[in-house]
Each structure stands twice: as C-alpha cells, then as structure tokens.
Image 1 (cartoon, rainbow, N blue to C red):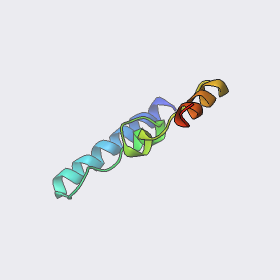
Image 2 (cartoon, helix red, strand yellow):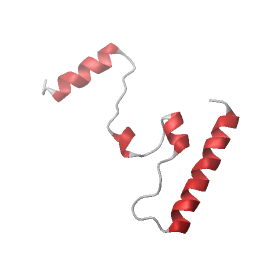
Image 3 (cartoon, helix red, strand yellow):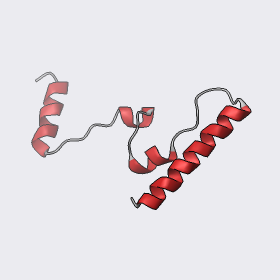
Image 4 (cartoon, rainbow, N blue to C red):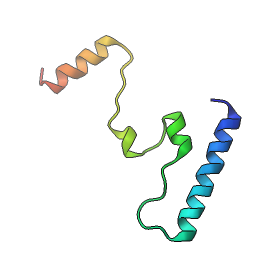
Length: 68
C-alpha cells in the first residue's frame, strides 16, 4: 500500500477518534480504517484468523484440533 494512502487513512482515523471523543459517543471508539486496509490490529475481526506457511502446517493444526 502506498505511503500516501496510509497517511490519508491514518488522518481519517485520527479525525474519527476526535469526533467520537468530542461528541461523547457511547461505546468503543470507531474502528481503524488503516488497520482494515492493512489487515493489522488487535480488533476482534482479526483475532480468530490463523495462517499457515505450508499445507503440512495446516494438516498438523487440524490433527491437533482433532486430538491426534
């Protein structure tokens, strides 16, 4: 992702958080646009995602889940 896009997403995130804070909106702050674009962050959307480097790793993980 180009740095210009990252900077724009970061600026939009900051403005969203400032608006959320100033208006005293209840609940959690808005989700990060930059994190959504880059696939990073600690949001609940990414917590249950796991990746594997090879088919063998995947098969080993499946076997471990099945108790084997």
